[in-house]
Amino acid sequence: MHYFDCGKIQYEGPSSKNPLAFKHYDPSAVIAGKTMKAHLRFAAPYWHVMRNELSDPFGPGTAQMPWDDRSNAVENALARIDVFFEFLEKTGIDFYCWHDRDIAPELNDLAASNAALDAVVEKLKAKQKETGVQLLWGTACLFQHPRYAQGAATSPDARVYAYAAAQVKKALECTHALDGLGYTFWGGREGYATLLNTDMKRELDHLAAFLHMAVDHAKKIGFQGPFYIEPKPREPSTHQYDSDAAACLNFLREYGLMDHFKLNIETNHATLAGHTMEHELTVSANAGRLGSIDANRGDTLVGWDTDQFPTDIYLTTQVMLVVLEMGGFTTGGLNFDAKRRRESHEPIDLIHAHIGGMDAFARGLKIAHAIREDGRLGDFVKARYSSFDSDIGAQVEAGEASFESLEAYALQGGEPALASGRQEMLENLINEFI
Ligand code: XUL
Ligand code: CO
Image (cartoon, rainbow, N blue to C red; front, side, top):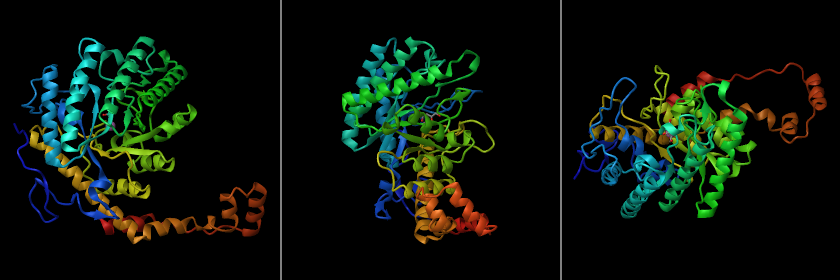
């Protein structure tokens, strides 16, 4: 049975008018010594592709899912896998991500839920082997079930904490069984609604203990990691502890977890935190901790996590500038944590949506590479800091300056004549390439 009304999507080049073709994503084209496919490492999220029914707070789902009987049966979960792999094959996406509860149902008790996972993982393993698809990362859903309403690893209730630990233990083992390249923690409910009832210090200590136990368990089972933390400031919690990249890095340092964790940065989370994606990526990359990307975008007019497909060429260019600068992904990739609009309810819309995201990133890659090859942008930034390359500036960078030596320099140097930052000129330069 086939559910997506198209063949395998082909690269037809920029002049093609075929909506079911790539105009820019040419998987085997080589840029800077690597194929586009190897640079971009596209991944599809099981939750949006297979499970998102496209409901919103005002109405039920609209998505047509003729393959899904909407039951909690393991057979239904197994049947979805074939449809998902048809989708991956047609879009040419080689990686995927899941939550435990996306791929298998949560049943009456933990043991039954774990058994359902085992059955599903066995089939996923066979499908991966047959197709060469790889698991980019797995994660446990610690935010949907009502038991997690007050948090999971930051729950005030130790019994809930234990349940969450058991769930992560199993999800980690399943990730490892599927040779997963990473494991993500997104703390949807790890935060609070009011400090009136919250002991923040204790909750953060508990969260750190939880993550240390995850690291210990990974060692025990031979999972090489990395673990990722995915920052997001709010929604569903009013305040989430992993609010942005800087807060996550500080937490990891404070609790001695830095060596085991990288960050998974998502565009719509960056903007909810009041930052640009570029900012969050740069903060992570500067700390050597940019691991993976949840590639989507928000809506400038809607103040929540709309998880739209990334189609903005400026955005994809900025993302790829940072990714190229850090030398590319290692274990990570570009996971389209994005959903169709509620109005786009047909299965083929999933294909259109991913074509758009993939083409936008292919363009971002080409443009970012051209900007780097051109060199003017890099040269400008280098020249802007050139006073730190010699003399007093070099002494500062070498740790050889003091307030006394800087004062002596300022006294004899007079008023510094500042050079222009040339923001507009640089914006024009970027537009030359876009
Ligand atoms: C929620 C979100 C999640 C994580 C995985 O905003 O981004 O889907 O990516 O739990
Ligand atoms: Co995400």
